[in-house]
Image (cartoon, rainbow, N blue to C red):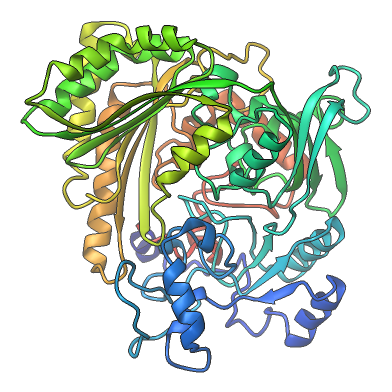
Length: 581
């Protein structure tokens, strides 16, 4: 992608950002040391996490063994400033310093460990003052700036080469409020709430909510940050159909702006920015240091979990047709769920906090009967119906037992599927056919990452007042469809390019039958066409652009296909030189 543009525009210099090898603008060691003193020793010279496994000055057998053992674990990877969850974002073409997962330990005795797509320096953020100092330094020296907590980023927005990262990972404050009212804001009535620091991940937030006997609305993966990209991009999970999206829960942000000022953002203070941060995307408007979200009383969750092997030709299509037939009714009853297809088996988890046990079983009865009468089509390894007392109980016992697949290179593409596609037999048939055609582009080469049909949208909890900036289609969709592909270190460049193009082709079938819909900003195709409308809708994007110019007029915070990003930046800004496919 980028190479073809460069061929046409080879005369354009990559000058917007300063590169490490440009001695005319790259700060001297003395200047970096001065920044380190300003931030009280919290500046990190970033070393790729895999460097300890390459023979050379950084080789360390014990550290290499530790890194190799944690290589495919998201909670380990998110603790490393020199790692991303998906290693294609650690790389920059052939420049990389990664390992091959799922192999026995051995030190690399060949190849070169390069910085790749990782930053040169990172601020271990502990205060608003330090964050402001890092922003000022970045602006003064034209150093690309990133904001990162855990590195769960499918589009590489929290890293870039020759850059400075604001690493919020250690901002771990959690506070429960029996009664909370946003600062200087009588428009919002008091409520129970929790304040989460920018470094809090969901497994920590869920444990805290359980401690205080309340329910917090969050995501599916333990290591995903609760306050960063997940929240600011919209935020979905299994409880979204019943309680709304992540952005529906926020009542207040604390933010460091591009000019270094530290502000409180809520419905009364900077209400335009409050709207923008509730769906406009992370890494765009400022550095969020904490967010306060409303919480709910403890809940019981009725859960249905199946793991079936697809045995006969056409069985997947028939199973999808049955799942499609019930999906709109289910989501309006409060069911959220994850349908994963791995090429030979289907894993389905559904949860509902609104129905009683008897009501939930009655709701699922037609689907269960279908599975039980098709014994020659499906081998049921698992089919369990269970009541969980509290979301934390479900998360620890079921959801967290299937760790996220990381330590690989990943590419995804997604689409929101509106209710109109579920309205008739004909429209449902077209949807199933589109899904199956898309799957043909990602199987069998991507056997270890699933195709996903997710009931994590919000048609029950609407936003009639327009208080959030997520794409309006999120409020009128039943499914969030995600195609995935992946590869490991050692795949030829031609295969990586092929796989990336195939996942884009796969989602196009769904795009074709969902005109006017969109894609989820956090889980979208790197090559998403018409991305401004696809991520937010035209009117939302126009409003977001104005707010962006008001609060960040010089585009200090910019990232791939975020508000304020321009297509020509891929050739005019060296920050984006690692976007290969």
